[in-house]
Amino acid sequence: MSSRANRTGRKQAGQQTLPGNAQGPAAVNRARALPNTNPQATADSLAQQFFNKKPVAKPIGHAKWPELPAGQGELFFECTLFLYSVLALFLQYLNLYKTLWWLPKSYWPTSLKYYMINPYLLSCIGLMLGVRVTKCFYNTITDIFFYITKGEEYVIFKSIEYGLLKTPICTMVTSSFVFSFTRVYVEHTSKAVFYFSVPLMAYFFLLWLGFDRIKDEDRVVLPYFSPTSIIAKISRPFCAALTLFFAIKRSNSLMDLDTVAHLCTLDPVQNRAEANALAKDFFLRLMYSFFVGFSTSYLSMYLPTVFLPYHTRYVQGIPQHLLLHHTWLMQIYTIVALTSFSVYFTYLLPLPYFDLLQRCAIHLGRWELLEGVGNEEQEQALPYVERNENGPIAYKHKAIVKHNNQYYQAVAAKSANSVSATPGDSTHYFFFRIANDPVKFITLLCMFETALIAFQFWMLVLTTDWQHIVTLVLLMFANYLLLGKLLKDRVVIGRIYKPSAEDLSLWRQMKTEREARQAAAASAQNGTPENAAS
Figure 1 (spheres, rainbow, N blue to C red):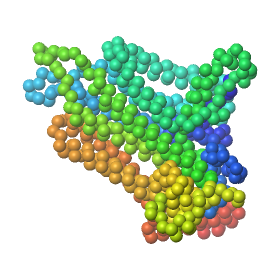
Figure 2 (figure 1 turned 135 degrees about the vertical axis):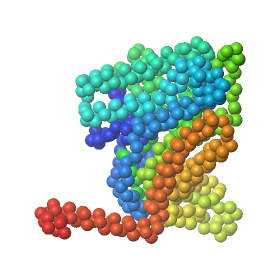
Figure 3 (figure 1 turned 60 degrees about the vertical axis):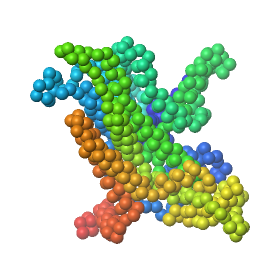
Figure 4 (figure 1 turned 120 degrees about the horizontal axis):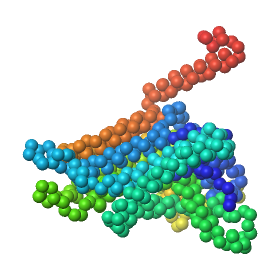
C-alpha cells in the first residue's frame, strides 16, 4: 500500500513547527506550490498554484500590515471552548434538577436532586464534548515529536509517542465512553443510539458538503501486486474506502496561514482560481463554526432534557415530577449555540486571514447586472470571453459585456483598474462583497455580538428565578470577552484599511524609526560603532 505521511497537516521538514499553532479543526494542507506560467493550465491545477511566499509581481498597492502578535494556540482555544461547554452543561443540570433548599422550611438538604442524575449519561456527554480537545492533544503530541526528531523516523521516539502517550490516552477515552454508553443503552435502548448519533450524522453531512471529487493523489493501491491478482481483488473494497476517506479529508482541510500567501499577479485565470479556493476555504470555516455551535448546544443543553428520569420517585411521601420550561430551554439553547458559533468563527478568522481575502478581492473585482440596457450600451457591449489568442483577458473598470444573454458592467476595486471575476458567478460576487471591506465585516460581527448580549440582558431583566439569573450571568461572560476581542480587531483593521491623519503620521514615524535602526545595525556590522552609537 502506498506510504503516506502520518498527518496531512504536517509542515515540510525544513520548516519548524510549534505545538498548538495549527489552524482549524481538520488537518490543514501545508504543501507550498509554485506559480504556474503555462496559460493552458487547468483551473484545478491553478487552484493549488496561486499561493507563494514570494509573489512574482506587485502590480497593485496593497495595505501594509504591521507585525501582529501570534494568536492563541489551537490546544488552548479548544480547552477554553470545552470549559465553556462544561459550564453550560452544569447550568443546564442546575435548571433541571434544582431544589428549594433556600426556603426556611425546605426539606431539601442539597441544592440539586442528585439521586435523579444519571452519572453514566453525564460521562457520555462530557466525553463527547471533549472529543476535539482529545484530538487536538493527539495532534500536539505528533507535532512535538516531529519537532524533536526533525522529521526522522526513530524507533525509540515512536515507541514513546505511541506506546506511552497516544495509545493509553485513546484507550482510556474510548473504554470510558463504551462503558458509560453501555449503561445508558441498557436503560434507554435504541433511543440512546439515535440521539447520540445525531452529532456524528451532522458531521458526516458537513464533510459530504465539502467533498469535491477523488483525485489521483488520494488513490490507495497495492504497489507490489498486479491489479488482476486475487489479493488485489480482495483488497479492492478496502482500498476504495481508504481512497474515499483520504479524498474527503483533503477536501475538508483548511488552509494554514503560516505557509500560504497571496500571489500578486495580473493573470485573471490565477486570480479566479485563487478566489475559488479562498471562497471554498471560507465556506468550510463557516460550516465548521455552524457545526461547533450546533454540537455544543445539542450535547450540553438538549441531550440532558431528552434522557430525563421517566419514573416518579417519592421523597417523604411526596411525589416528585420534573417540569420543563420549554420556552426558557429554547432560549438558552439558542444562546449557547450562537455563542459557540461566534467564538469558533472568530477563532477561525484571525486578522491575517482578512488580509489574504482582501488582497484577492482587489484583483478579482465584481460584475454588476445591468437592467434596461439601452441601444447604445448594447452596441458598446462585447461578448464575454476568458481568453483570446494573446492569453487570458482582464476587463477594465466600467467595461460592458454580454454573457448568457445578460449585460454586465465591470466594477473594479478602488485600488485596481481591472476585473477578473466571471459575470453571473455567485461565488465570485459574494466573495467580493465579503472580502473587499474587512472593516465592514468585523463591524457586522461586533453588531451581532452586541445584539446577542442585549438579548441575554433583556432575558435577565425579565427573569425572577434564581437559577435563571445564575445561568445568564455566567454565560454572558463569554460574550463580553468575545465582544472585547472583536472591538480590538475592529480598531486594528480600521487603522490599517481606513487610517486617520493621526494614524498616517504614526505610520511614518514608525517607518523612520525602523529605517534608523536598520541603518545603525548596518553601520555596526561594517565596523563603525561610533555611527551606530550616534
